Length: 483
Image 1: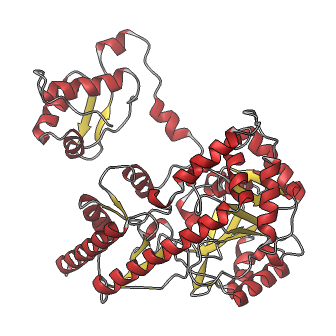
Image 2 (image 1 turned 60 degrees about the vertical axis):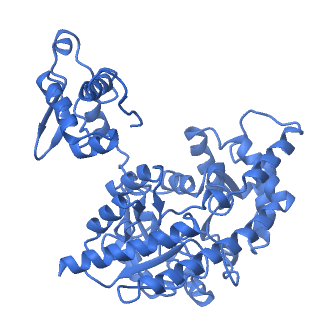
Image 3 (image 1 turned 45 degrees about the vertical axis):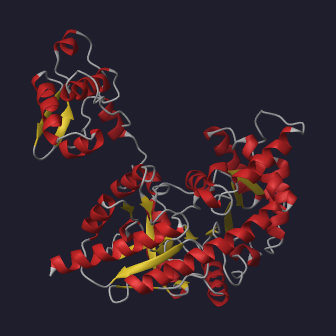
């Protein structure tokens, strides 16, 4: 809600708030059954005293628009004469609850909303900060494209042919041999996962993955009645010695992994572990989804070759993206797979959106063909390394004795384990009130209640300095009060 009462108006504030809520209900924006924000939250949103909000809500309850109780909060009921005299509106809340696609976890819904609030320091956000995005170069790219003949129509089902050819060249440097017919352009790697979940697997299938994992924070597979089975990790990644047992025990259909700069732990799977993983999955006939979106973000040495580069039996479905390295707003990624798989996924994608943005695809092709992409990525590595080093320095200054962590060699994340007793929800709430937004570990593993995913990618240097020092103060305050 971006509305605010007019403090210069002669109309009392509580009447303005009452009229605002009435309008929301009458337009159907707040349907019957909608739970409205708490009195405290509304007072903060409208920058008024809580008593002002209470006066507005009391009037609305008296008029039959709202009802409230201490347990269920305040909800829209709309028992007004206008409603009783006319056909009742649809109960949209029941429609919402009947939808088959799972909602985000409440914590993630909160984070998604809060990320766009002014003044918030985002210590968990998994994207590049706006000052690292190549806005001026992107303008030049689009100016260059505007001078060439191009179509504003749809692209072919697999995506822009020229872009797929550029992806082939890019992958060749990673020792992945493929062709344009084996590539599908998608609107980010997440859409690739959605297509795979809908097009290749039966309902009720089991998916093996690292625990913790980014995949727990989205409901791509769960919304299709599939089960995520976490396999424990160590410092080198997923424990391959457990895969056979887990595969047999859960009749798993495939394995999902982020071997390079894992989300959320930042772990880099070494060459030896990658060989072990490929061998055990080949022996078990277990296909692999390799999510390689962080590959380019290494600091000192490039990561080992992708799993897909050692895949003579077409065991691996490979996901790549420009969202983490170039621009999340372009919404450009790709799936590399055998041609029958690509044909199947392309058919489903055409039913979804009739193809990713043609303008974004042409811009991405220009970035890759011109060599500007690799130049940009080199600069991004340098910036991210400086931010990682600063974050590690700050952790050593403020978190020694209250947390442990590992040093990532690339990517966005440091996986922090608090070693003092701190209720994570309390820490999240107090940090948010102080202007700091966190990503609790429980988002990625329900048993990781003492962990935080700290990202150095989004916050500016001065924000990292203040945010981490303030966060340490909060941890210490809460841990002392809990004793």
